[in-house]
Image 1 (cartoon, helix red, strand yellow):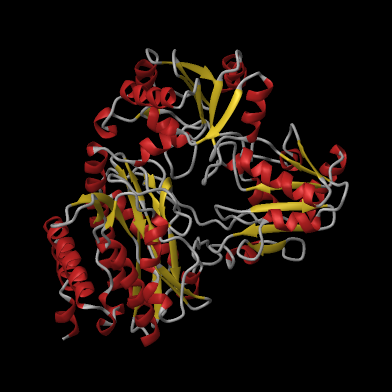
Image 2 (cartoon, rainbow, N blue to C red):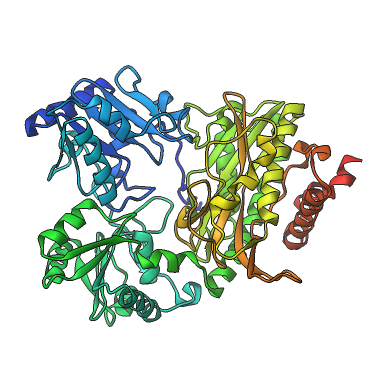
Length: 612
C-alpha cells in the first residue's frame, strides 16, 4: 500500500498566547534592559510576508496569526495594530483584556505612541526587524512624546520564548534557465549596469525573492513560497557573494554558481559587508526589505548607506517570454483542477460540504497533475459568515459545513515550477438571496471593468483601482483591501512593486502579472470575491496616438452565473462574461472527462441562454 504524500496544509488551531502571562514575561525582560516599551512587528530580518516558524514572534506573543500586524507593549498597556483584512480575525484570537486591538484605519502605531509614551521613557526595538524608514517613524513618535528610541542587540521576545523553533535549513536548488528565461550571468550584467547608472558601488540583496530571481535558485525555508533565506552582495565590479542561511545547496546549483559568485556562510555576511564599505563605498540598501541594522552597520564601517529601491525588484516584476509561457501553462493546468473541484462542489453541496473537506479535495485535484510543488498560500475556505473574514483560515475548531442559502468563498493558489497561481471563486449553495445576487453582480462588474481596461503607458494601479469599486459605490458599498497584487513566477503569490490599489503608485508595464479581485463582505453573514490573474500586455488602438496597455486574463475557471443578476450588467459586460466562459470551455473541455466536461459546458453557457 502506497503512503499518500503529506498535505501542504494543516488545520490545527493556532497556538494562542497565554494572554497576560507572555506579556508580563516581556515586561520583565524590558525592566532588565532598562526600557519601558518594545515594538513587535510581524516580520523577519527580510520583511517577509510569510516568515519561518522561529520568526513568528507576534503570533507567539499575542495569538494573532495574520500575515501583517504590529504590537506595542508598554509597562501598563499593550496594543495590536491590524489593517482592514484582520479587524474581525484579531479580536477572536487575542486576549482583548490584555491587548487592545487597534484598526489601522483609526490610528497608526506612531500616532498611538505619540500619545501613550510618557516623557523620559525608553521605547526599545530590534533593528533587524524594522526598515530604516520604519525606525525613523518610531523615532519621530517617541520624540513627540518626549521619550527616546533605543535599539537592542538581542530580541526581547526571543529572550522569553521557551521552545522557540530552530531556524529553517531547507534544500536550495536550481531554477532551470529554460523556465527562468535568462541566465545568471545575463541577470548579473543587468544588475551591474543599473548600479553603474546610479553610481552605486555595492548592492545588498536583502529580499529573498530577489536573491532567488537573480541567481536562478529556489529554496524551502518558507511555507508555500520557494525561498532560500539569506543575502547577496553584488559589487559593481568584482565577484558577487551569496550568504544563505541553509548550507544544503544541491551540487548542481553549487557547480553553476561557483564560477560567478562566492558561496559564503551566513555568519560571514556582516564582516564581508563591512570590508566592502571601506573607502566610503556607496552601498544600496533596499528601502522595502533592508533592515535598519544594515544601514547602521554600513555607516559604522565608513560606507555611505544609499537607501532606495533594489533594482532587481523592477526587473523581476516584468516577466519575459519564457516566464509568460510558463504562467499560461500553469494556469491551464490549474484551471483543470479548479474546474474539477467546482464540479465536485456542485454535486456535494446538497450533502453539506465542510470547509476542510473543500481544501483537501481541491489540493487532491491539483496533485493529480503530478507537478504541484506546494500551495501558494493557505487556502481561504469560508462558508457563510466565515467568508466575511477576508483572510480566514479554517481550523478544526472553526470548521463548518455550508448550509442551503449560503455562499461558499474559496481563495486558493498553487506553486508549479513554471508558474504561480491564485484564484477566488464564490459559489452559491442552494438558492441565493436577491441581496447576494445584487452584491455579487456589483463585484463582477468591477472585475470586468478591470479586465476590460485599456490605459496609456505610465498609468499606475491607483489610477485604475476605482474602476473596480464604482458599481459598489453606487449602492453605498465598498471593500477594505486592494483590488490587485503582483504575482511572481514560481515565487511569491504577493509580489511588488506593482499593485492595483489606492497605494499602487508604480506604473504598470507590459509583462507584469497581477490579480484582479474586487470583493464585498457582509459582517457575520457572507463574503464575495472574484479573482483572476491578469497579464499586462501592449494594445494597439486604431486611430490612437499613444502607446496603450491592457490585460490578458490568465485564469481559466467558470464564474457562478447563478449569482448574477443580468439586469445589472451592461451589454458589453455580458459580452465579456460570455466570451470569457467560451474561452474557458474551449481551453479546458478537451482535457476533461465526460461528467466534468458536461458540467463545464452547462456552467459556461451564454448568460442569456442560462437566464431563459
